[in-house]
Length: 148
Image (cartoon, rainbow, N blue to C red):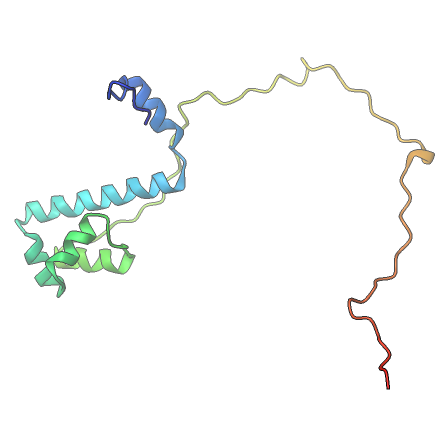
């Protein structure tokens, strides 16, 4: 986001516009997915009143690992997510959905009837390129005579 000199970020409209620029950036989408995943884990932990220490005990790992995992400092694999879900008595539902329609209007091309027809360019026989004669390939190693 662009930050002004006085420290303010800008209006909500400017922030939304800034976010819209990164909407289809893979790194941005990954970060959003990780945030949503962490949020769902936190909600499940809160509903079951499970602390990080308890989750670490259930997973057979350290509390520091859980802190790194939920803080985005640890590389999260699907296997790790399944282990966390099992420890919380839950399961993941993975869904691949089509993208929502873009907010920006799509570029419109002028209708074919509105565009003037281009005359076909005729290539005369003398204008055609002739294939260049094949060249002999030189080897990179040249034969040398040995001196005696």
